[in-house]
Image (cartoon, rainbow, N blue to C red; front, side, top):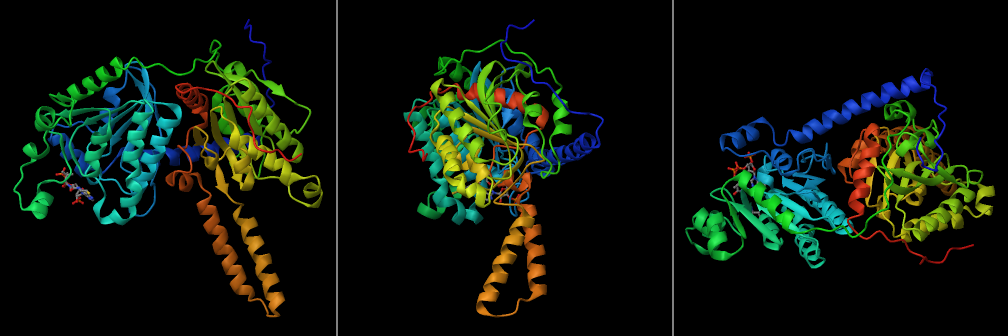
Amino acid sequence: MSDHPFPVVETKIDRTSQQYKDNYAANTDSLGQLDAALAEARAGGGEKYIKRFRERGKLLPRERVEAILDRDSYFLELCPLAGYQISGHKAGASVVAGIGLVSGVECMITASESTVKGGAINEMGALKSGRIADICEKNRLPSISMIESAGADLPNQSKIFVPGGRGFRDLTRRSKAQIPTICLVFGSSTAGGAYLPGMSDYVVMVKEQAQVYLAGPPLVKMATGEDAEHESLGGAEMHSKVSGVSDYMANDELDALRLGREIVAHLDWKKRSQPSRRPVEAPVYDPDELLGIASADIKVPFDSREVIARVVDGSRFSEFKPLYGSTLVCGWAHIHGFPVGILANNGILFSEAANKGAQFIELCNQTDIPLLFLQNITGFMVGTRYEQEGIIKNGAKLINAVSNSTVPAITIMTGASFGAGNYGMMGRAYDPRFLFTWPNHRIAVMGGKQLGGVLEIIQRQAAAKKGIEVDEQRIAVGKAMLEAQIDKESSPFFATARLWDDGIIDPRHTRDVIGISLSAAYSNRVEGTTSWGVFRH
Ligand code: COA
């Protein structure tokens, strides 16, 4: 008998219902799509380049990641589908990144995907690296970068040159903030690739394999006429014995990984916060049922308590204000022992629900409890009655609370994410520490049908004002094309390719993903605030 004081959520789902079965089938299908996309990312540059790596006796980037992790460590891969199905880009954007344990320390681990264009970075890679740097800084995670990068993707230099410089700034700023940065150089790292070790706190280079130079021999020849030779220009031995760019010379790749682990071990790393954790209890209900619960058709609502019951410890949930503002479920629970305050949509946001959410966020800040947002929101309620009730000012209260809250927040998009509902529920622009989506998720300003309909009304009104006749065929074709475009742009694959989130996850892994994210968040101080802007009453 558990001594946990929170009650267990009762389930009402019917596994034999048609809706459950349809959802299960559609979500399984979407997970198949996700697996195929992830396989594309894992394939890197493809067979030809992988073979070349093997022939040179080198580990593949993902093998380097695997080898540096502690035995049995998790690896929460981040933004694995950046660049997916964007013309001129490969899934993953030439960087592998994720959180895992090295020498017992939770670290951000990145590896150049050097089977793609020699690890050269394009604009999607720069965007992904920026997001990874942001996660390191906000959560105070030490980072280990395993570098082998041809620097800027040269034909695309115009898209990368100016924003690309940010990565070097981020590294030095983390160093100033006492968040360690460790760089292991495995291969040729030129120009921008050379500044990554240049700006890192610790540098390891692999003997007779790693080369670091501002300009390789061809560019030196062009710039100064000098006939330079790779090893004396930027080899591991030269940088370890002569220039001092390298702090340690590794005999081979495995030795570099060993040195990386040794460096992390000497950091004597301490997290800045220690949560009061409860003993971990698995949920009472099977997380597999999430596939039957999550609506494949986002127009069909589902009870977010059923999701909570399959994500939190012991399915135990202490609900706040259960009789008020029923379209936003709020309450406290534990996930992998960590305390969380949950806000979960159960329909459109009305004024009462928005006010309740703002109050709940204040309460969690009072007691330093991290927030978990389970988004499934089509927006705030519209219409004369609701405007007169002050839906704008009440929605603004929720957005104010979300914007100024200082406890870590994690957002999971479990269905719809439309309009200002995205903002009020801690969407990407509000800086949650981590944001993951389910494969049934859809995201946009509004649905394709609604957007097409709104534009049609505007076009008809404009024509009437000018006294001209509307071209029915043009309107119909335009509307159909727009609807198709919005539907395509609302897909979770479109969103994740553009870094609107940190990855699409299997709903059944939600609890573990949140557990790792919370654990990472506690690397930094977890502190609420009592300081807010003006709440309009
Ligand atoms: N931008 C775009 N593409 C690049 C690139 C870059 N910076 N560096 C390499 N590539 C491409 C190559 O053109 C080649 O493409 P292909 O297979 O379609 O022909 C592919 O990446 C692999 O390069 P390759 O030279 O065949 O591989 P390698 O393992 O023998 O050598 C490097 C890798 C990185 C040592 C070598 O490509 C190199 O020196 N690149 C230039 C680095 C540089 O000067 N960068 C300056 C950036 S400011």
